[in-house]
Image 1 (spheres, rainbow, N blue to C red):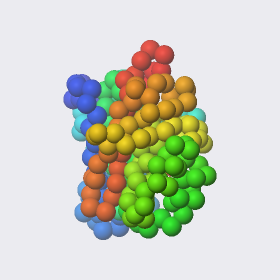
Image 2 (image 1 turned 45 degrees about the vertical axis):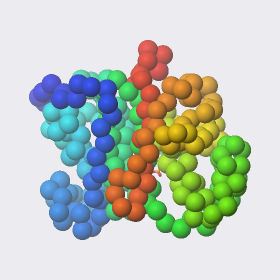
Image 3 (image 1 turned 180 degrees about the horizontal axis):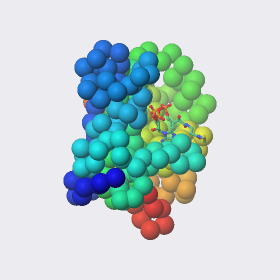
Image 4 (image 1 turned 30 degrees about the vertical axis):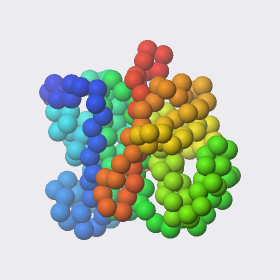
Length: 217
Ligand SMILES: CC(C)(COP(=O)(O)OP(=O)(O)OC[C@H]1O[C@@H](n2cnc3c(N)ncnc32)[C@H](O)[C@@H]1OP(=O)(O)O)[C@@H](O)C(=O)NCCC(=O)NCCS
């Protein structure tokens, strides 16, 4: 297996939107390899990650840890990767020297949003949502919180089982920012969050922090 030097030199996280549906399959060259009914998320993710890292997509040493989190093995052990799929989209991210997580959600009515927030979110977040008078604003805020929380929890690697209530986001000048979290996640200020619309009808969040000696990739 020959692995050429990686192309990503900076610590800025990179992300990319890939269509991920039956129509997209016909268009996407990589999907031609898919024998399954639906191209697997990892196959498509590899198709973007490979060129980013200067490696044959099929040769990328991606493995799943005990919690199912995808990780890169040597010689790419100082890179982190994450992907998320929703509706007809797949969002893939990678970075050098950072721990990252990405989440993608299709915008759709969520009639149980407040019920879920009151039951599973941090009390401070549920209060914020409760205080929003406009139902459409409340639903939008719920989705933003959901994406932000999932992005951090995916970066952390334990998934939702860690507890959605163990981290709290609040609206800041530049969007949501982490204001409280379980010590297992580090300090809230360790984390950066970027909220964005990768494609019409979708919301996404990318969360990252610097990889440290105590918390290796
Ligand atoms: C990880 C999790 C947050 C994903 O949420 P989701 O909205 O269902 O799905 P998304 O599209 O955003 O992300 C799916 C991707 O997350 C990644 N993923 C899976 N487990 C993960 C974990 N523990 N941490 C970070 N990322 C994970 C995978 O890349 C997966 O893609 P795949 O379909 O190719 O396997 C959620 O599924 C979860 O909490 N899983 C529980 C993990 C766990 O506790 N496993 C127990 C050991 S088996």
